[in-house]
Amino acid sequence: MATTQRIEAFAPASCANLNCGFDILGFALETPGDTVIIQKAQHKNVIIKKITGDAGKLPLNPDKNTASVAVKYLLKKLNIKCGIEITIHKNMPLESGLGSSAASSVAAIYALNNLLELGLSKMELIQYAMMGETVASGEAHADNIAPSMLGGFILIRSYTPLDIIQLPTPKDLYYTIVHPNISINTKEARSILRHNVALKDVITQTANLGGLISGLYLNDYALIGRSLNDVIIEPVRALLMPYFNEVKDVALNSGALGFGISGSGPSLFTLNKSKDSALVVAERMINVFNKYRIKCMSYSAKINTTGAVS
Amino acid sequence: MATTQRIEAFAPASCANLNCGFDILGFALETPGDTVIIQKAQHKNVIIKKITGDAGKLPLNPDKNTASVAVKYLLKKLNIKCGIEITIHKNMPLESGLGSSAASSVAAIYALNNLLELGLSKMELIQYAMMGETVASGEAHADNIAPSMLGGFILIRSYTPLDIIQLPTPKDLYYTIVHPNISINTKEARSILRHNVALKDVITQTANLGGLISGLYLNDYALIGRSLNDVIIEPVRALLMPYFNEVKDVALNSGALGFGISGSGPSLFTLNKSKDSALVVAERMINVFNKYRIKCMSYSAKINTTGAVS
Image 1 (cartoon, rainbow over the protein chains, first blue to last red):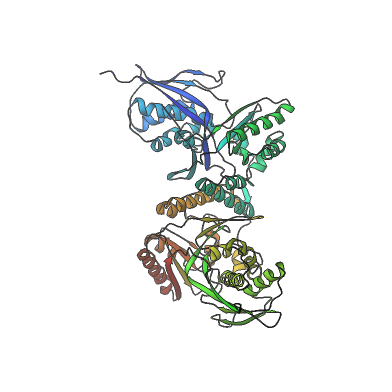
Image 2: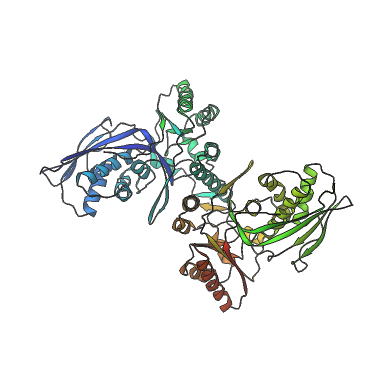
C-alpha cells in the first residue's frame, strides 16, 4: 500500500499582544496566511526545498528558518528518523506584526503531524511549533502560534506548564488590519518597553483585560470596544510609529469598536461589529497613511475560528 | 393612606482585592452581613440612632459613619429634604477585610431607596453607597460595595465612567473565610504596596486574571484554582501577616482550589468545589492559627448571588 508522501497545510496569520492583553492574548486572521508543503525525502535530513513570496529574505538554512527548526525539534523529541523536505509559500508581509514566522511553523508542524500520522492534537502540536519562534524572537512564545494553530481568540495563561485557553468568538466580530509600509524590528520594539509599570496602570490594565474577556464570553460588542484600552504598552510603542495618534483617532471616529497595535507593529488592527464597518475603517486609516505617502496593505474579514487546515 | 415609615435591609460582607484581581474584583458572602433600619423622622436631619455589635467602636457622628455619609450624599444629590434615623446592626468583625463599612452603606442606601420609593436600580444605587467608602478608606471604592449590592462575582472595569460587570457564579463554588484575631489597618496595608511593578509580573498577573474570569464563565473549577495566583500584591501584604505561608500551604494541601487575602486582610479566603471541602479547609487553617494561640472566626458557604435584600 502506498503511504502518503506529501501534505500541504495552511496556517493563518494572527494578531498577538492584543492591546490590554500584552504577551498573553491574540486572535487568528481569516487572511493572510502561509501554505507549507511537507514531503518525505530519500535522504535523512530536514531541508528547505523552496520558499516563495519572501523576495529572497528568509533563510534556506534549516537551522535558521522557523518552519524547519520546529520540524527538526519535533522529530528529535519524538525520536523519529525521517528525511523531510519543506516548501513554504509565504502569502504575507514579513516583520509586519502579523505572526508570519508563527504561521510557517504552525503550517509545517500541522502538515508533519498528518504526513507521519502522529495523531497529536492541535493543542499538543503547539509546543513543537513554538520552538520555531526561538529563531524569530529569541524566545518560545505562543501568542501567535496558538491562535494560528487553533483559530479564534486565545489566552496564554501560563508557560510553565503551558496552559492555553480558547475564548469564544462573537459571531459578528470582524477585524481590520492595516499594514503601513514602514519597518519595525520585533526585538527593538520589545527593547524600548519600560521594565517597570506604575501600580495604578496595572489596575487599569487588569480591569480592561477582564472587561475584554467578559465581552467575548457575553457577545457584548460595546464592552469589547470600551475595554480595548492599553495604558502600558501602546503609549511606548506608539512612539516608534509615525502618525499613530492620527490614525487611531480616525479609526475610532469611523466606527471601530477598538484599536491597537498588532504584535509589535507596524501593522495596526481594529475590531468591528460588521464587515461594512471593517471596510470603512480600513479605507479611512489607509487614507491617513496615503496622505503622508506611506503605502498600505489591508485585510478585513471575520475572525478565523478554524486555525491550521490541511 | 399610611406610607411606610421604616425599612429594614440586609447587605452581605464581601471579599475584594480578589487575588490577581487587585482593586477590581470581588465576590459577596452568604454570611456574615449587616442589617440596617432606615426610618423617617420628624426632624430634618440624618442621624445615627443606634449601632449594635460594634463594641462601641463605630462613630455615631453622621459625618463620620459610612452609612449616614452615603445616605446624606444621596439625599443631597437628589435634592430630597427628609429627616432620617439610621439603626445599624453590625454582625461582622470590623477592619477584618470583609467589607464591613461597605455592607453598612449598601444596606442603608438599599433601604432608603425602598423607603422613599425612589425606584433606582441596584446598579444606580452603587454610586451613592460608594460615597460611604470615602470615610473608611479615603476613596470612593466600589470593589466591596458592588458585590455587596449585587451579589456574585463583580468586576469593576472602570470608575470614569463607572462600569461594573456581573460575572457568572459557578453553582458548586463555596468559599471559606478565616479571620484571625490580629489587626491590620487598611490604610497601612495599602501604603506598603510597591508603586512600581515589574513588566514580567504584569504579564503573569493579567494572564491569571484572564484565566480566573474564563474559569467563572466556563464553570471550570480547576482553571479558577490554578489562576488564583497573585504575584504582585500578596507577596508584599503577606509580610504583614503572621504564619501566612504556613496557613496558605495548609489550605492548598487540604483541597482548596485557591487561596488569597480578603480585602487588605487579615481575613484569608479560599474557594472550594464543595461545602465539605470548604469546611475541612477552614478547620485546618484555624488549627494552624490556634497552634500559635491566635483565635479565629470562620465562615464557609456558597457565594452569595443575591446581594442586598429587604
